[in-house]
Amino acid sequence: MPSDQEDRKPNNKLADWRDSCLLSSFALLLFLFRCLIYFRAKMNRLLRIILIVVLLAVSFMLAVWLNNDHSYTHDHRFAELSLMADMIPEEPKESIVSKFNGSSPLPPCPPTPPGLVGPLRIEFEWIRSMSDVRKASGENLQGGGRYKPLDCISQHKVAIIIPYRNRKDHLKHWLYYLHPILKRQQVDYGVYVINQHGEGTFNRAKLLNVGYVESLKEYAYDCFVFSDVDLVPMDDRNLYRCHGEPRHMASAMDKFGFQMPYTNYFGGVVALSREQYMRINGFPNNYWGWGAEDDDMHKRITLKGMAVSRPDSRVGMYKMVRHLRDTHNEVNPQNPGQLHNTARTMDTDGINSLIYSLIKIEKDELYTMIDVDIHAPN
Ligand code: UDH
Ligand code: MN
Image (cartoon, rainbow, N blue to C red; front, side, top):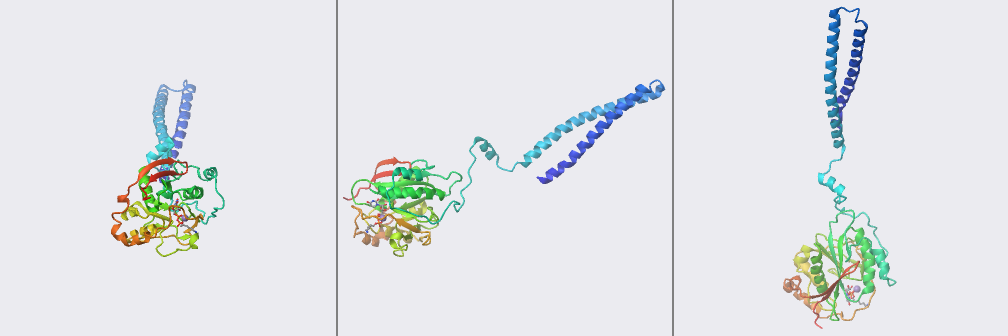
């Protein structure tokens, strides 16, 4: 572009020179004309003819020149316009058009979200009102607990799946804290609360499978975070997204003294991509009551040759709302014994054998509640 500007400078000088010539020619013409009138009587016939011829010639040249000058000015203006066009920053034509339409395409979100704050103060001391939660969390949500960043295209389409029954106060804490965190993390996400219908024995892993299927009916999620309703991260650098390996996000829970209770622990909050989840045939459907379904999930992952990744023990800190054991979710002493069968049963028990009856889907501003009958044995 600068070289182009240089090219045009001599043209401007030439224009100035032509203007001066034009003026001088006019002056000369005027002078000759006055000479003709003044010395007409004193001149002989030949001199008068010569003067008239010169006058005519100069007039003719002037007329030609004027004509040329007119076309020159025309070209010159186009040249200036094209120079201006060169100064507009290069961008694809469609984007210029769409700017005028008011819908310019957004850039991709950066790999590290810029608005993170790190360690968070989490309080569960009082019961929150739903209107307080809405005030703190509802901004810019699309309904049903859906959100997309406003100023960039998120690289992470994440369904957050929460197994649930009768934990309204815990859900309010979760929504109060998690929505602002997820927005700061620039996630394209939806919150799905999978409510086990009825009073039958609770089955956490089966509810998670239902959440996977139902969330995918709504949107092309490529990542799934499976989270207990009572667990809130204490650091927003713990990103709710998927990684190259299945991720155990709750690596430092307060109830275990911010340590792993045992090496292969895979409970609380985990993230799996669609491919990772399908590779292990989802989660087991037959762990009724409390215990061992998370160990089965871990076994499935290692049996399929994958490793588990975790945040460090600072970033992986979680606070759990203190609670008593729920009725109909008592410890099931049969569950740990099933772990011996995982290798044999995992390809036939999982997402490919999931049977449930959908009762109702309710859209709250802050979440989608999926009420489901999972055919509990009693
Ligand atoms: N859940 C419900 N409702 C239930 C049972 C479980 O929503 O009735 C869900 C909820 O998301 C919960 C998750 O399942 O966070 C896991 O269940 P849990 O919180 O009962 O599991 P945790 O390991 O508790 O935290 C163990 C029993 C705690 C006894 C403590 C006695 N000091
Ligand atoms: Mn709990």
